[in-house]
Image 1 (cartoon, rainbow, N blue to C red):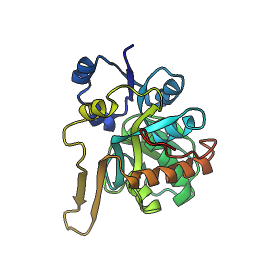
Image 2 (image 1 turned 45 degrees about the vertical axis):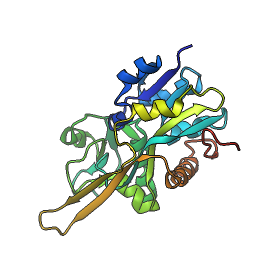
Image 3 (image 1 turned 90 degrees about the vertical axis):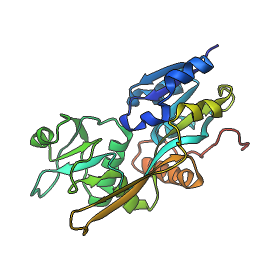
Image 4 (image 1 turned 60 degrees about the vertical axis):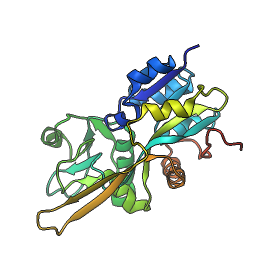
Amino acid sequence: MRNKIAVPDTPYLKDLFANADRVKKEYDIEFFIVPEHQIGEYFHNNRFDLALLSPADYAMGIGNADYRIVEGPCFAAEAFTRLASVYFKPNLASISSIGSANKDNFMVQIAKLLMAERYEIYSEIRKSSTQIDEALTENDAFITLTHSDNAALDISEEWYLNSSSPLPLAFWVCRNEEAPDNIIEILNKLAVDFYKSDIIIHEHSEDELMVREGRIIRHWNEEISNSLVEVMELLYYHQIIPEIGDVKMYGYDD
């Protein structure tokens, strides 16, 4: 039976499966790109053998199945990364509405929780235009998977200021007894070349008075494992997940 691999349609994760066309032919696997808000449910229902999951999707499943994280290519953001931002209307006394074109995206959901934790801003996120100016005519704040203005809050930077740790965004998950053959080899070949190296981000103002730095981590390590526990604790505190599970790795006995 052909193995089935699923990835979300999240724009910033494409490097983790950039070589999908070549790999699916080489290993005779089926490859699916699905909406991010559905991939966790699909994987839970055994529609796929291997999936690229967010921390929330991983946490929702580990209490009901033997989910295992595959040590290898992953995606985590440390400090300033330009991956996602929060924009505000000028001169606001309070925030009563937040819009986003990607309201179900994991990073957008983290932004919502951070705004509550750090700034006591409590608002549901509603679907809005993809354009900043247009979205801000209908909402007090706008969360987007782009960055174009130093005045915006950078979501991964906000996470780092809150926790001093990187923010895990996606990693490969299988079921311990159902992992595809050659799983490590497959995932390494799926990712772009040199995936083990970090991407360093550096931005500064023209007068050099404002410097923002960060990195994108593309290979699983112990620091990301510890950060995943922090993320699950935050999700549990806000009742997004029912319990805090263990971080379980593929190939390790418990």
